[in-house]
Image 1 (cartoon, rainbow over the protein chains, first blue to last red):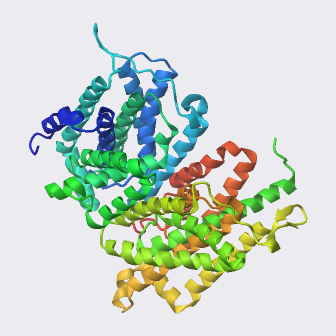
Image 2 (image 1 turned 30 degrees about the vertical axis):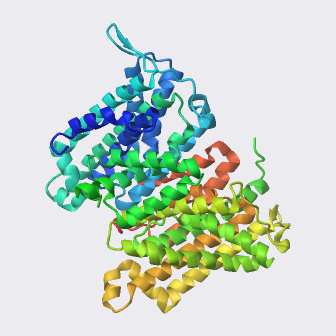
Image 3 (image 1 turned 90 degrees about the vertical axis):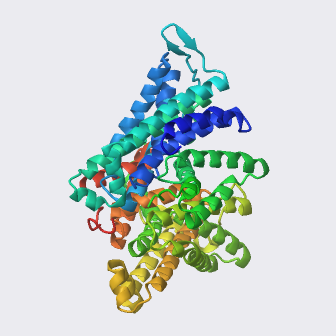
Length: 309
Length: 294
């Protein structure tokens, strides 16, 4: 787990669906884990707190959803690519504006731009379905040459998601191990010193923001395939809040914290929603307790990892 | 095509002024807390909602809107004091992100608690009988209650300004927002000033809530959208700048009011486009000092 986190990831999640109550929860954990992974790159490793992750999750989901439902794209890869491209373009643009301000301003700006996108999505009902959500998504089978694999069974879809998310985890590992990843963490620790070392930190932060948008967008795109519908809530601020909570529950700035957090959040939600409607009250209180008493999160406390500042 | 007469337009300007007044009360509270404590209070919108509900309960109990108008902000402010003492204070010395995260959790809890106590649908607040009608402004009739809101906002702002500029406590607050270390070194208890300021800021949110109640009703999610717009007001005004918050709140109130009139579909979006433009041309906000508390 220490030296080969990607192998560890594949082993754990290969058996994961057989230990959770039902399989669709397992795929949800993988997808939200990827979402939190993207957020963690920005917050846990670069030290930038975004409250607007729903924008990129939503761009990914709508991008892929619109490609499949409206543009009648027949290639799954192309549809996923369109979703990711939408998220990357959105991230590059919004990142440019938000990174004009540092620190706490940044959090408010990301939230504001995500809210802008929410209203745009709401009003462009011809494309997004507006309040009703985007319906009519059919998930094409995977084709490689003459080999063809339909994704309509939940087990097949789970392992397909595992492969995609696993590749993203490997990509994140590669990013963090690169000199670029080292500079990200240097910025988190001391931005002035990183500048003094000659790094163009605004460009590096912008790049980190784009990677964050890419991971969030891929997660949103996968969720569009999982649900075969894109609800307008994808762009809602509560989705941004959800990923913040998941990441901090698991442990910001730790490699597996996002997945631990996503699993904890979704399993708790599943369990608590059975006996009360007031799930937000429960998770809000749990989250406050974590901020006050367990800022390193579950995984960070277990492994003694870094707490996101 | 909307009625383009000058009278209709002037009425719209007054409507924008009412909205702007609510924005200003919220943004000044946020900005005061931020300027002094570098704490972004995410639960500000939830406290605004509490102000409206407290108003609803107090009007029912006392039978007087005006008594409720005084008591509700005091109660919300008192609640704010508890929040500062038990939730925010343990986080001083940690990252400025931590109070933001904590108050985000608090806002989820408060909204849900309001749903449990007062139900999911929301309630209506009756404006006082004395302010139920409309006033002839010469060019148009305008609801008296809305004029009253404008007046209360103005009086409170002038009061706040006098407090900050003319009293010793106000002097220490202003000094504390410039250089808390130095104020501490001069022997003032900075913790007590922060405590007080958090109470004032949250009390202003409560006031905004009960003022908005008779116009919009009270419902659990009422603070959610307006807190995001208030953040925009603060960012546009320049963070930590009270005058900036006032100007930007009034300006954005007008922009929203007029957009609602001419292009209703754009009304929700225009605030954010305006913010993007300000960021592009004046990154530190209208009256913000570059680099303050970054």
